[in-house]
Image 1 (cartoon, rainbow, N blue to C red):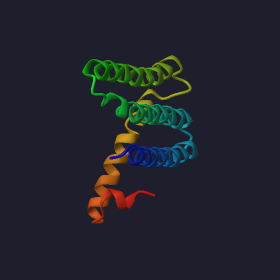
Image 2: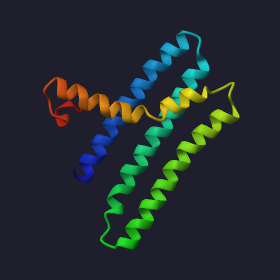
Image 3: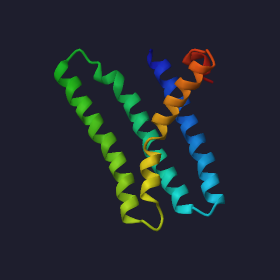
Image 4: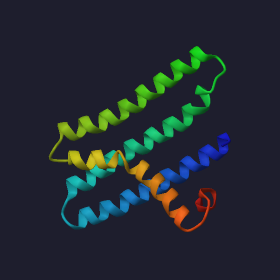
Length: 133
């Protein structure tokens, strides 16, 4: 996958994840579960930010200099874990604003989106490249 292909795929996944979160958040909000809606949104934003950071760092970690690539990889993982930890810490610090379980679910929205896209494209007989857009 080229850098532009990676950027396009990442953008598509992030858009779909945010749309899924918005739809679920509206349902949660309409049913009066505002802390759950906020928690899902917080977790999803952290998950999307983690995917974006990973997509930005991935080409840099393919550096021929092994030591530099390892340092960048470790730094990337540390930053992405930090983003997720901040979301979980906010849920623990403000339990009246964010439902902790919803933040945890939100952290998996990107993975759910990718899995759903692959599954649906397989059931519909299309390649994942045909589902983008």
